[in-house]
Length: 95
Image (cartoon, rainbow, N blue to C red):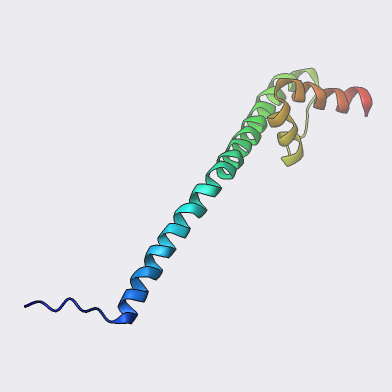
């Protein structure tokens, strides 16, 4: 006959592992939306930096350039084409 008696420490360990897995599942589930938002933000900033680089190579022949740094990449990534226009206007009209 098979002995099915489990030591209480084994039962507590099994319950602790199950509880840990459930908590980890809900933690990952609750962070899924902010991680998507952060990845979207980083992709937009990267795209803004690339767009600024392309615009800089085109307008360099006209004697104008915009510095590419995290702040200008952020503005152009967040605002898109109007953001690049805003950066150009700030550099050459206002400043």
